[in-house]
Length: 108
Image 1 (cartoon, one colour):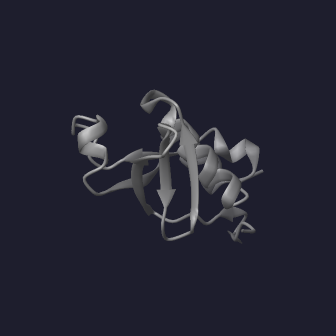
Image 2 (cartoon, one colour):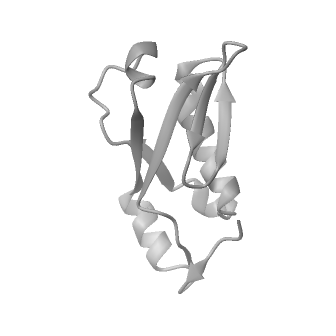
Image 3 (spheres, one colour):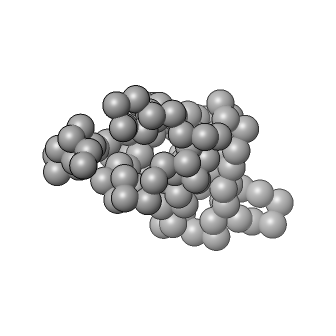
């Protein structure tokens, strides 16, 4: 999907639904049902990083902006393990650091 820019800022969803499940080969799959895309990982430790990469590539986010935007899990205090992940959808919200906010809102 081509990135949509308004005033030189890439427009990304504020919240994204993510469904986690184990594939037949045993890898973890993170699926974004609203966009019909997914990524996979051997480890739960890597899945959030790969999920952010997937979002950035799908929305064609410029590399210089990727460093300052993160999608973070809405329920970070929830114990993340195989049983809790497979029980339903998780939600990730867009987070822009304060320094990134300055850069993001005042592009050069």
